[in-house]
Length: 232
Picture 1 (tube, rainbow, N blue to C red):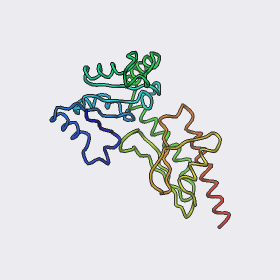
Picture 2: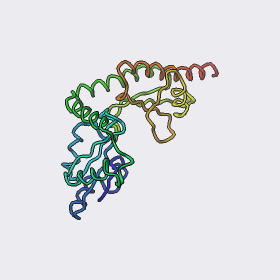
Picture 3: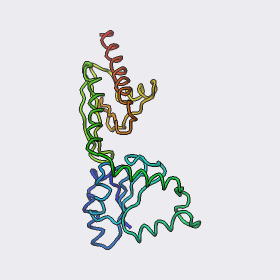
Picture 4: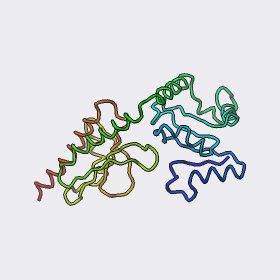
């Protein structure tokens, strides 16, 4: 079987659609790991239409089902083979990673609820929350914000907070550490590079948590701004 990691698609020399086409041409089954690629909801069927024989999604993340569960979609014969490698078959490679009946029922319910959602309304709410946090910090000297959608994996509205290091002598790690160690603790989205940029995800927040995130981000950045002003 050929395996494709969907999150690597932007960097790969062979893109996911070409990968599926090569597998088909060679007569080799192919599996795509799309763990973090719901939403959008249409991805639940898009990769099968693209030509993949099996598609794997996390049962947690965007589906918001049990974290120890997952979805395997695609060819019935291959899914049956995967089933034979799990519980209750004792001499199988998947025995150590078995999922209980409770998680299976929980994931089925999560999928049923997910496909019935008003995805457009949910998207607008994410944009609103990201903009709310952006407005809370955009008045701070040297700070700029923008709402963006990652190229792949967790493709939903996020907020990018950028600042002028001359106005705010902080690194990304400085701000992330202050948020993590404050009250309440807040963990921001990991981002690569050393530029003074913070990425805030809102799609996993519980209702009424986004104002708390806005307040804490503003507190951390304002404290640095005041310190810089007083020392100037």
